[in-house]
Length: 253
Ligand code: 13P
Image 1 (cartoon, rainbow, N blue to C red):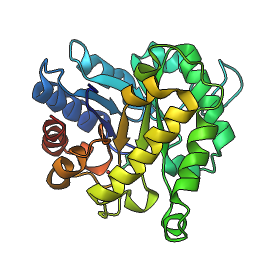
Image 2: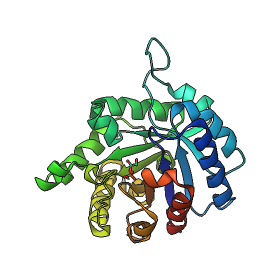
Image 3: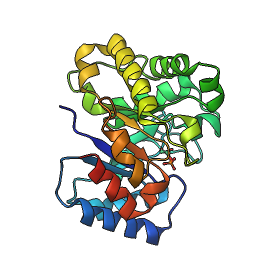
Image 4: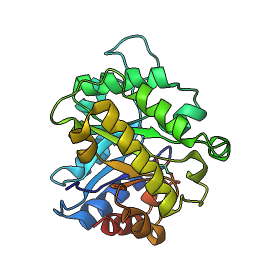
């Protein structure tokens, strides 16, 4: 039985004040209910203050990125130790905005995945095809490449399913209001689960979580989340509204 996992990716939104209010409302809405795993990923400058608000709540704190070196002259970058220091349990890696707007490739993302796991952070690894790739019928090839290269050299262990979450985020569905249909999401998720099974073993494949991300809203969340291989959501825009985010968390029940 996989516990659903809903995470809010706040991207480059919020202020200190709105981040505090959003986190406070999420904490009140979730209470001590742990039937759905919940995380929020604020921008770096607000991680510590949101972490304070989350104390005592089951909502986990997540970074949106990291740099895969322990420390050093890497101006503007953030290390695994810094994320852990401010209370992060998760980090989002390989997000399509970092792949396509900031030029990250699979090898660099893989370095980050391994650095995060070695440091004890849990990884949400995002994969997903562009519209062009989907229309050229390359969806599975792209997912296969991003998954295989992204997870290369990941150390296997019995608790790997706790430490690695995959987020299927079709690029054409992100911030566009155009979500994948439940059938499209299910097909991609089933493909990812099968491929992960070949890479990391059948036990892991049956246990690990695959979130769907891309224009998840309160009114489409339930139909996406009831697909057998959709284990939760990685929510962008709707996670900036506490009522909408909490409605999506409830839809995961
Ligand atoms: P939207 O929910 O705004 O489409 O963003 C999805 C996303 O990129 C989450 O990481």
